[in-house]
Length: 42
Length: 172
Image 1 (cartoon, each protein chain N blue to C red):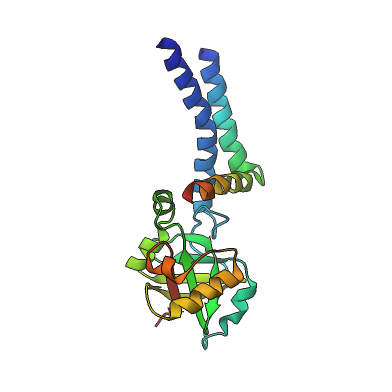
Image 2 (image 1 turned 135 degrees about the vertical axis):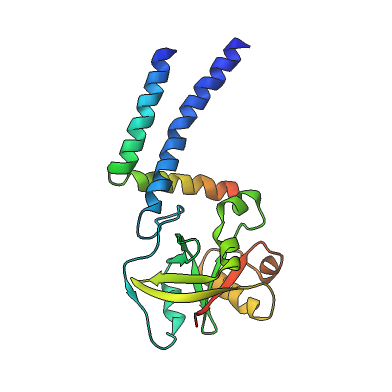
């Protein structure tokens, strides 16, 4: 379980770095979020 | 019981990854000059500030979205826009749903303080947002909205509060 927590922490850090610095990732996240948000708001 | 707790912890941990992604993207957008899609952007900085006579707004009917910034708070978002009978209108749907009311904060803020800047094709226009809740002009506005977008906005929907419509009037 300890290894799992480390893996999740690493995944979160990598995700944040990718959103901040990899071109297009932030737009992909926003686009995906928009899709679910629009559906939920109806 | 122990197993259930463990499953819940695992699910929460896995959920934290997309939540972190969305939160990071939202925070990042706040520091940008303008919005992207749904996340609010920072103040509209780039672009010439328009001065002069009231433009012929019919050109906005060829533009899918514009950037709207309120002065208070100084955040921007991307929204639909339409022209009807020579006037400029912006609006917000989903205002009668719980998710919509959480998501759409700007209409409430605009009703409190309607001073706004709209950036269209790189030009910034200072406007005053005035909410319209009734009147015959709603027929023309609803027709302009449905004629331009795949929207089911009706006068009744606006009057019922499901859609908040604002005229983007000149700011004096």
